[in-house]
Length: 238
Image 1 (spheres, rainbow, N blue to C red):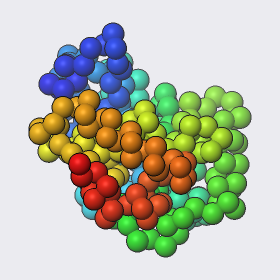
Image 2 (cartoon, rainbow, N blue to C red):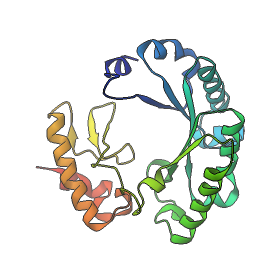
Image 3 (cartoon, rainbow, N blue to C red):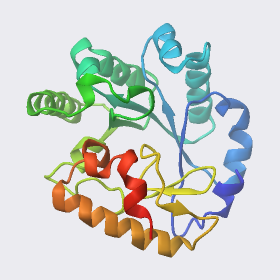
Image 4 (cartoon, helix red, strand yellow):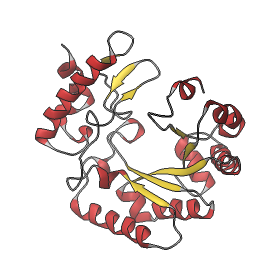
């Protein structure tokens, strides 16, 4: 709430992504701080599978209860989820879309699964092939064309070569709770720390690395060996 309250509403709009574990109880203080938009992460439409994936029993119920309470309190609410070949093939992604529609959300956000965290090393997401991308695009297009469906924002479309490419170091950066300055929250290795250097210096350094990245590919940093977490630290040192 303190961070939200520090944002100038005339210059930026705050969007809170949350797993929903404490959302319902914190809604009053978040609204008082000026928050108006919330996206709740839902990995599976089925309660047991979501809880198992997250390793948190009871999280699905808390997430959905928080989403409903936020909507009732007047927030713009959304569901955030992720796409992968397996989730597309098994129908899990579309099930989350249907749940979001049933809950009457304002927006559905879809990110691509990336080789980071628990998904690092998972074979089917190491490099997305063209056939999968066509299938996913067809599903997204079907939902774009469907009547009475909330807005659907697919990051894979934004970062494709048909648009602006990966936003890390171009229009986006991430600061971890510990002050680490990174291209995004999936790239775990920082280019520096906001506790030790000026934000502007870190941003210009990140932009240099981003330009080097874009000369190789417009795709996600994590799909390039040269720009992986293991190699990013060495390139960031000045």
